[in-house]
Length: 118
Image (cartoon, rainbow, N blue to C red):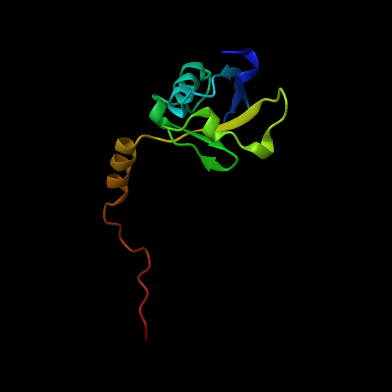
């Protein structure tokens, strides 16, 4: 593949630091990008993903779907010749973990207000 066809991406983390930039084929999927983000995630961060499913990639305000390609995610108004596209990488706990936490939160709570109307 010609060098000029590659898309250069970097991933902005929650604290403002970046992973990348890296060059990708326009045929690369979002799932492949997430795997790279997990592999390259700095070890010294307090919050870190355990798997690719723990990462949400956001570009131009939209959460990217795993089956979409880089070519499908590129925004034409953001195109700059030889420019680097920044995507935000957000760590979100897996569904199983969220369900476990939700069960704990659903325990009955006592009403702190014991007001009476006269």
